[in-house]
Amino acid sequence: MKTDRIMWGIVLLFIGGVLLLENFHIIDFYWRNVIRFWPIFLIIAGVNILFSKNKSQVGGLVSIGVLVITLSMLFVKGQQRPDDRRDWFGDSVNIDMDNDNDNDNDGADSSRSGYDELNFSEPFNAALNKRVVFNISGGGTSFQIKGETDSLLQAHVEKKAGEFSLTKSTTDSSTAVTFKMKGKSNWSMNDGGNDVDFHLNKNPEWELHMNMGAGEVDFDLSDYKVRTFNFDGGAAALDIKLGDRLPITDVNVKTGIADVKIKIPTASGCRIKTKTGLSAKDFTGFTKMNDGTYETPNYSTSTNKIFINFDGGLSSFEVTRY
Image (tube, rainbow, N blue to C red):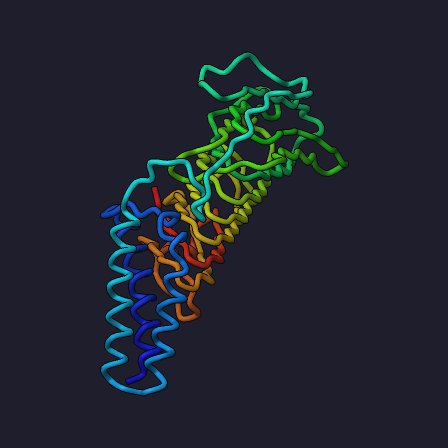
């Protein structure tokens, strides 16, 4: 009996099954609940090594039984909503509530207890802002787009920890705006953290580049001219809606453990390339091609096209048409 292969197969089936059940909204699974129990797998590996020396069938069955029981316990534990503020490895979270801040953009007292408010704004110059590169970085933050503005962009921040800044640089061909968070911020998908609401001007052609650790992104970009959207994140939840304001839109998503949902217009043709390891994929309305890519039926005939590249480890990727 090749116990090692069987055990790895059971682990992969467990991970894939959980992701699939989450994808169909049958269960809510909190991965941080089970990450802290990672030493269990060292124990299972040790048991397997001990029994593998004897090469006995009974030993192999014992190893498999221990693994199945362990995964069953983790399956139950992972569905329990966390009721304490702890990070992914079980340590208590200490949030720095120091409110001293030299930023002139500090706003009034927040309506939410324990939060500070910040407001940022960049003016719009029609002569300089035909193409805008918007760089966003930070962790422990929930990002949303809340509509348009007459300025180039506005940002409203409700923060628990960390420091935020907005800077701008301009060349002959484009304007680059960088929104950055510095400092420690402890966050989970269940407990939340800092909140940032953006308002963007609809006139420029936007290139968005996001680099973040843990966090949430909810961007409705359907009314904006989005040429490029790049996302590089760790444990993140990404939900974006794209429009058809430009002939070509490029989307590149690289994640660790993430839940990624992208909505695209039905009228736009779309091609998806994936490099996703153990990730779950749900591309409704797409056809899988011989080269491993996925295409919409109108890909070759549509005027507007969206190109999506997924690169993820243990993630769930979903693309739907509206």
